Length: 88
Image (cartoon, rainbow, N blue to C red; front, side):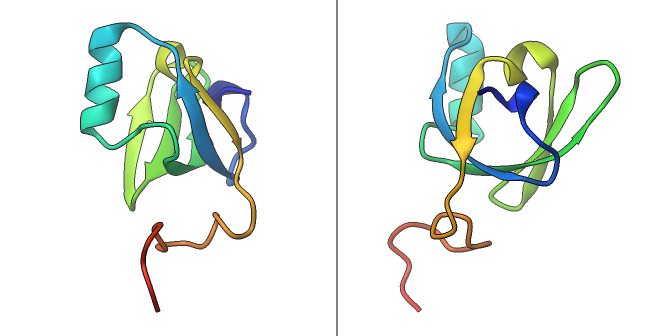
């Protein structure tokens, strides 16, 4: 599924991104790459999606949201603020 098809307030893991190269590079610069955890916060009437990635909220248009493929994050990957490799 894509971010555009996601359920509000659910946590997801980015699986792949299929979008124009220059937009892909911008998403990478923002830290949105395969393996990144995100939460779909809101969806506007015009299709704009508000996502939360690493503590920052981003608004992305429907074209970009439709190119970010995600799967629902499992319980072990959905722990808020815990990144891979961190130790308690």
